[in-house]
Image (cartoon, rainbow, N blue to C red; front, top):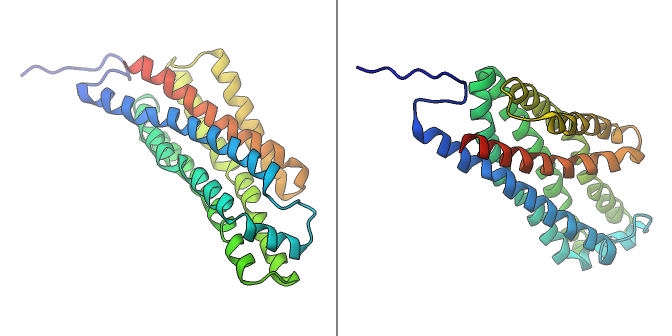
Length: 234
């Protein structure tokens, strides 16, 4: 019987494993594309249909009722990256398992899935605002609508902690294996700093732009890591 031993953490005795990982990692590219599409739509939504942030509660309730279709599309676009993100995490965790061990791979997978789930939950909660506005456009109902509309930014900020953990684990594991260069390492550390800084949105709303930028940069990070790893595994 002939025994094939791996000479590198990236060489596996199962030929199909790399092909499977490359397919899973492609989810990172799709994740980036979906985030970009959702971001463009949200910008259009805020420019055309979203009630002004300083609108009265009654105006907010009425505005979200009238923008029900835009809210629905925006929510769907916000949830669309979820399956592709999970694909990417599966492929990334498989690579990390070979370069840094099962504990790091599990932590990365859980951290990434948590970040995606928290952000998705914020979108789902905010999506009920048109239904409330359709039933009741009083000041009390409008106050609830405005509060629920504010859940998405808070969810985006909260996802910063698990997102930062994922990036740190991946950065250390991939750097140790020589899979990413100096530029990618610098970009990763910038993403970590912005993700953590964005969580300060709970202390002051002025920090939310950092949370929003870090979420968008994470999509770019996932896409770039996916492209690099797919080339190395090819």
